[in-house]
Image (cartoon, rainbow, N blue to C red):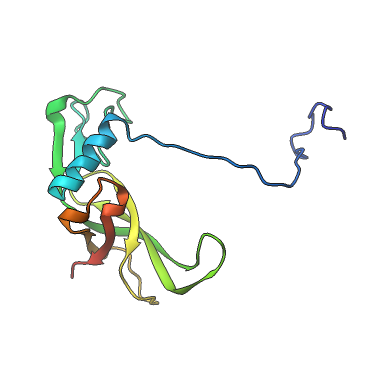
Length: 160
């Protein structure tokens, strides 16, 4: 098969090995900017409540993902920085496939009072115990060190 030949069989995709540089820039947008400034300045999370279905969207959004309605300015609410572990895994390798000094727990955390979740590092030792349902609290950088980014959330600590 030549590279100019038309692909007609979807079960045998044309591919080649190699590296391709791909730089990404993901802007916060208006909602993300407000969320991160609030996190930096007040140390709390923001969510939005849909005026139609009452779903509490976290992280905050400008439009409801279910109803497709715009969220008015007065429907922004502060929500706790606490939640419950929905799922988790222990990573033993870094992004370059190198072994970590000690395993790191990555967890999806359902934020209290919302219909949303956030991915974060869970500050626990590797265990065979089931951590699903564990109550946790976000540990934030000290106020003077916050930048208004995800890095302001150091980790989530068990709140039991």
